[in-house]
Amino acid sequence: MRRRTFIKAVVGSFSAWPIVVRAQQPTPVIGFMHAGVADRFVKPIIAFRKGLSEAGFEEGRNVSIEYRWADGHYDRLPGMAADLISRKVAVLVAAPTAATLAAKAATSTIPIVFELGIDPVASGIVASLNRPGGNITGVMNLATALIGKRIEFIHQIVPSSKVIAVLLNPANRAVADAETTSALASQEPLGIKLEFLEASTLADIEAAFAKAVELKAGALVVSSDPFLLNQSPETAALAARYGIPTINIDRSFVSAGGLISYGGDLVDAYHLTASYVGRILNGAKPADLPVQQSTKVDMAINLKVAKLLGVTFPLSLLGRADEVIE
Image (tube, rainbow, N blue to C red; front, side):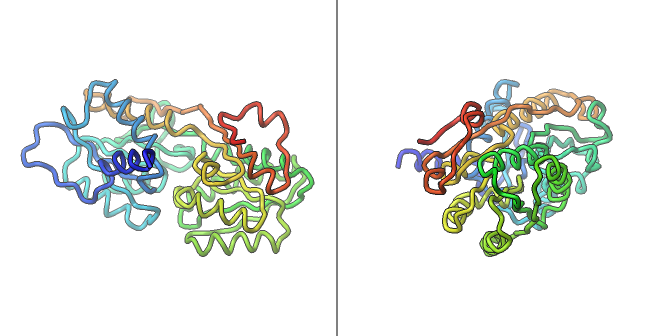
């Protein structure tokens, strides 16, 4: 109960919609827009606030933050961006990819700092990593780039499987396309066949698991899409029901009863993002700030689930795990 109370207290301070700005507020306002659900990003937001504090900006003292959460409904993002822009925010923070694209489409003048998991150059968000150009820069984490590793790791757990399913969200086309390209590169070296399944609703996710069984997939890999991340508890339950070893990007999946997670460390990425926000509030221009890359990764393993599924983790994976549930 104490943990639940803590999460509610933290999330309650940044999930309200809308938040009224005090008239003639003398402090700068940061607009923060996110494609996901607030209670899935408690620790990253704490890290973001810490990064701001280290840059000299304390929320509620000399800066305020207006949070907007799309809850996985990407059609809300353009309206959220327009609303924050109308409030004349000093900096617009956008995370991850879908929110970044909406922010970039909405303004070419207000500084934008992104946190995302795809290549911002290949996706047309910035001109180059060293010289992003325009009004936008930020931090890229290891999300889409690691899907090949997630496929490799789940194949090590189920080495006899010749078919692995990959679950993507078609509503997040930029991420789906990037991960499809990266995933396909792992097919031949591993000697497997990938089956790409799509889901943009909870019902779609259950249908995807049923389809994976029909296709005789020995394992399933979940995309780094925020909507799919939001469904981690439901995905873990479906993986158990259908008996399919599944890997996700965030350890919340493992805590909810999933088998294994592997992805970029979002706490580190959001901390880095805050440092750039602080520099811009202190007068730096986004065009002069090279895109940073968060290189930290995080792996969690649930041995209880492994026992139920009848699979064994190789020592090489157990040795690199940041958390092991026994």
